[in-house]
Length: 67
Image (cartoon, rainbow, N blue to C red):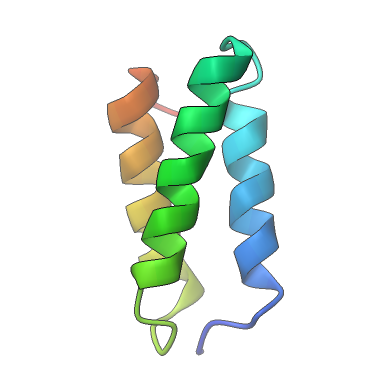
C-alpha cells in the first residue's frame, strides 16, 4: 500500500500529540524536524515505513521510548 497524501498531516498531528508535555520552543523544533523528514521522504513508500522514520525521530528527540 502506498502512502496517501492524507497521511502527511496525520504524521504532523501525531508529532504534536507526542510532544504535548514539552515547552512550545521544543515542540516547534521537533515539529520542524518532522516536517523536514516528511518533505525529504520518498512518498512512494508505505505508511508503515514512513511512520517508523517519524517515530524513530520522535523517540530520539523526546527520549520517550514508546511515543
